[in-house]
Image (spheres, rainbow, N blue to C red):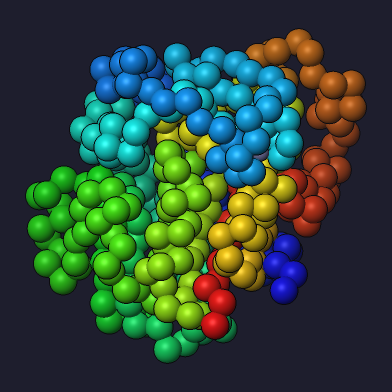
Length: 346
Ligand SMILES: [Zn+2]
């Protein structure tokens, strides 16, 4: 089955990535988050604890280019163009970082509060609408829903009311016990993916999760084992094949370790999904910010070596052309914000 590629465009859904969204509001707070991230990394991931890995999408060990961000080495796969960190931290170190680091606490306790209304309107509500509509279309009898790696109290508030589910589960939430205890109706499965295996769930949400999971192949296999035939997995991620990432590359403010250890290319992610046996029933890139992010980067002169075409497009073409170009990126799966709906075959 060919995945639908233009659903986001057809439905005119404004669907933002949580971290992309900050580019709409460049702020001291975002810079503070980046500074805290850089410092937290030193505390949580000593160099001698990291492990080398091959491409998380296709397994190739050949690389094309590399750069260092906050002490982590990013490699570009020569075969599928996925951008990934190697050597990388273990799953337990990642869990500890997202649960305890100052950077993450700042993000959810302070930064998110500053943009709560926008987040509800532009991220959480469209996300829940996407889930509800897709469930009606593909799996109306679903009753159980699991959200993996829940990080935000605001999102959890919305999730508890998600329809049509009567059972809800959190898989390795990074929220504090205090917050989690206020939702006694939600079952908690803590620990790494080895702890999830026994759980059976109709629908699993993996928003941003494949970006920081140290072993995405195992993650997909675990998710597949948890789902019944016809079960669904919704996921979103940042793609290295997207326009702003391709143009800005190491200068992109959206390459943030350890949140983004894996920036799959469209081609690499499709290859991995095919190998894990899922049907990909939707793969769209409904991002709306690529052109705007590149425009801002050119205006603030983060680099002087943008391609002639990109510089010309941004400097000399009008807003209408920029909008048409963004629509072309969406329709061609060339925006950096990707969302996918996977189904376990019946
Ligand atoms: Zn690869």
